[in-house]
Length: 223
Length: 204
Image 1: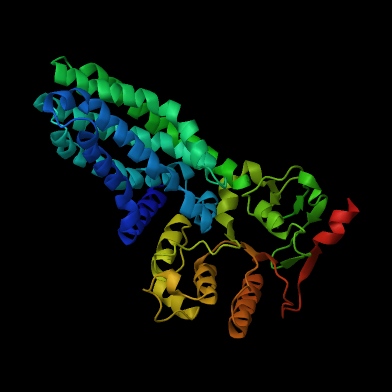
Image 2: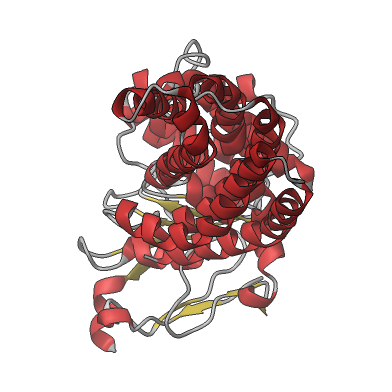
């Protein structure tokens, strides 16, 4: 059962090591955009601190969206995706392995980078732990949900725009609860509520998304 | 051992195509470009679902026994299904985990046999088209699937490679395996069934 999962996880991480440039893309995007905010808006610490939670979350979301498009694209183009679809191993687990690999090379680095960028935006001290916790769960949800969109649009010539349109509405709750967790912490309120909702979203996505993605991949292979 | 019949009406590419294959037979699908050879092979590989018609394996509808069918079937498509930045060895490793087998051959032995000795550890993008095809065909040496579905397996490989592949197909047939393949070349195997898509398309 787990053989397919481990094989795909290992393979995708190995591929990520070989193509480091592509992997660094979302992280560099996140870094550059957040660095530009103080230059473009104001270097004043007080005003930056006000917008920091929202900015960090929006940029992390866009960085994640940027990277999710390629999730199945190269597999589709070189014919390895059809080998996965007709494998006797469960497609559900192989999809889960691909999403996990994607999160390890995009969501996790984004989460680890976020506190550094928070410092640049003079995020108040109370916001760091909720920022990391919400991003840790939130980027995983983004990867899982993005995988459904990526699977649906993989066979299309120009699927990028469509992918954004499909996935954006589903990203909204993650953004709202993620940013509000950080904002509430900064304002001195309890963050348990938004973090609990985020955990629930993650549990739901973890359960449903691989099924939906596997189904979408089968549909896409028909094109 | 099995009986296969398919129909497909999608923009009338072809329809009313039927064939039944005994253990140990080889079926060559013929037809001009665009006749639907690849489509038919992808239907047999259960990647596409036919608009009409049913695929049977060991007398049972494949849709109801998909898991077992996938276990018994190996498909090599137009695209070699290799990760370009991985080496042939790494490609064979992940593929064998995703399509498990009990073959005693190690990956290195198999790559040696398909003539990729010395190329095991170089990325696939540095290999020629023929070498990449050989890296993909290495899967035939480790698989225990009785049904092989091969789309243009002779593309890009040299004369010696063609001869080796032909002997591999004959051995597979001698073991009771079934091969369905498409190719424009004349195959040097005497006992081979042929299915022409151009005819069947017009018949409908």
